[in-house]
Amino acid sequence: AQRVTQPEKLLSVFKGAPVELKCNYSYSGSPELFWYVQYSRQRLQLLLRHISRESIKGFTADLNKGETSFHLKKPFAQEEDSAMYYCALNRCRNNNDMRFGAGTRLTVKP
Amino acid sequence: NAGVTQTPKFQVLKTGQSMTLQCAQDMNHEYMSWYRQDPGMGLRLIHYSVGAGITDQGEVPNGYNVSRSTTEDFPLRLLSAAPSQTSVYFCASSMGRVNEQFFGPGTRLTVL
Image (tube, rainbow over all chains, first blue to last red; front, side, top):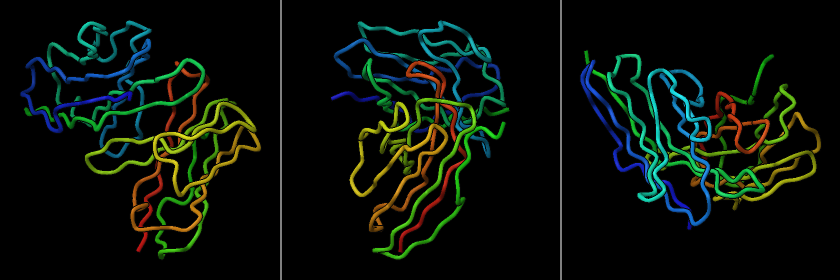
């Protein structure tokens, strides 16, 4: 069965330190992967998606099909990056069946 | 544009009661979805729709019904509420499968 695993529920780093939020998936087809973020008192919003191969707010994520991973990285964390981060997988070409991981709460300390 | 709107924001039900959570979007999106968010479990897909008149089940559909008579609206019905349905419910819409999903503000539901 398709599944998205975020092994860390909580992650804490100091400002300026590198940060990596892990995401592993299990899916037999070609996955479409996303990172969504929810800042305090804001709506859940898209951070980035693997097909765009873009960097948003300094974050990047590379799809590694061999390791079935889509880890989110930022070289220098900022306090405003503190939020809940969700990795998500869209599992089928012909529908909109999206599966989310349990989320990682990132805290960036001053 | 209002984006994705959800009503009500909060609701308390007794076991066995029924109710409808409303979701509307004004972006002319074909795709709409309902999720529930529970502590430690992330978001789980309940039902989704890829266009008016087309709906399908997600990961946790039991106890919920949906319909999509218009592009704008995608209501979620709880037929007979149970305490296990206590959760925060989010509606989302997108232009397509690989496009960004826009989320509503959520409805916090408590079933006693």
